Image (cartoon, rainbow, N blue to C red; front, side, top):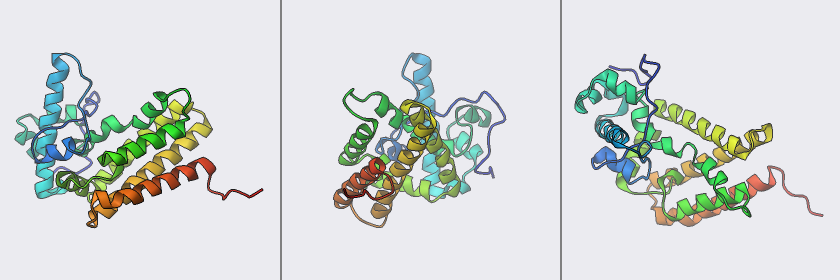
Length: 243
């Protein structure tokens, strides 16, 4: 059995990409809007994206059927018809077979900030982006009740090693956002608070849906919580004094 944290010994392992597809596991990523493949380009990049997709689809399907810890990397490699060393060149750790679908979201907050209009503040742009995600039921906001997505998120949040690995992805999101905000200490502090808020909002939405509520039922409360959260980000933890 391969331990959940097993890594390849090859130092030049490829950075995990993101994939979608048509199988059970693929639906969890495709319907979730989690993933999009490595950078689009020539034939080599297209073939790489297909490989990412095929290997991840095989892995997630097996993980959903049997549980993350009960499937070895060797079994995933065999199901994808590649060698174990080749698999590790695409996915440096077993957890990346699942979490690489979040890789293209690592710098989403940073992209929103850098791509905002000149008359929009970073916080206003991030608020707008999150509310738009709620409106379209983007799984990254936790507000998605598609069965395949629910199965994928239950796998994620129900596996401690995947949750721990997810924190590393969120740490990179924080670093990218801090850089987009300017890179100074105040920017790093702001980025840490913003990424934490987005994580907590998404997790609360997911918990309500996992408990049996529909996305439509949760929506109004999710919007209210998001609005309150961005007000708190803007004003700070201390209540405003009245003049």
